[in-house]
Amino acid sequence: MKKLIALVLALVLSLTLTASLADGIKIAIPNDATNEGRALLLLQAYGVIKVDENAGITATVADITENPLGIEFEEVEAAQVPAHLASVDFGIINGNYALAAELGDALAYENAESPYVNVVSVNEKDKDSDEAKALAAAVLSQQVVDYFANYEGQAISVVENPTDGYDETVDYEALKGKTIRVVATLDPHSFVLEIVKGILAEKGITLEVVIVDDYVTPNTAVNDGDAFANFFAHQPYQDDFNAQNGTTLVSIAGVHVEPMGIYAGQQSDLAALGISK
Image 1 (cartoon, rainbow, N blue to C red):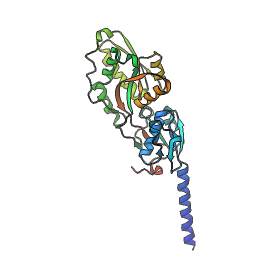
Image 2: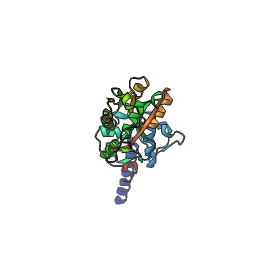
Image 3: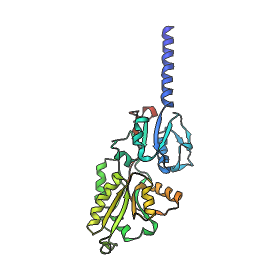
Image 4: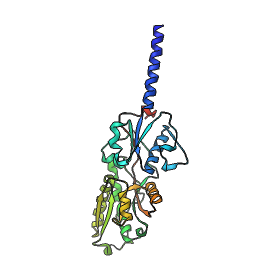
């Protein structure tokens, strides 16, 4: 009888601890429209939650239809998710912010074959200008494609037909002495632009790179005319920003994908989420 009671108590304790762990799981996710949806869809891809199919890439926690583990989500500014890892079980982080925080490999990544291609954007009125063509040709160069090999999968080039850095339709002589100002986030965007800077310098063009750490300034700077272009965000984010703010920013180059990942916080593996790797 004593053994039976002990076994029952052990089972109850085990179930209690498991339920407690599940109920207490906390995950930090970006709070901006498309990246929050992207994070939730990543969890759905691994079978952790289900999201209303009508919400799409702009889903929020309010669109979660099934959350069997009772996960609590902390919605924070995308750049701040790495700083929250110490206080949550997991964080879902954009590749550029994971690189900036030197986090190393994620516990799980989304599929790199995704619509979340990082783009260089300009005002619609400037998209056919020689400045835009010169910038696009440089950022889509073989030199830039080769550079992404350094990231070992954390950032992946999507350029299928790299250029030699130049566009034969551009009047580079007319651009000589001009400055093109681009607002970018740090890694890998500003590092890529250092390569672009050298390519354009060969034609006498100065590339001025302004580094920021948020997802709003790059778009407002281009929209307000304080910068010619930006390089920081993926296409779905830019599309959503235009829809929400009435701006007309367009892509002149799709450069790379930064797979979003689930990163370890207080949990060192994915067992608590029921994911086997």
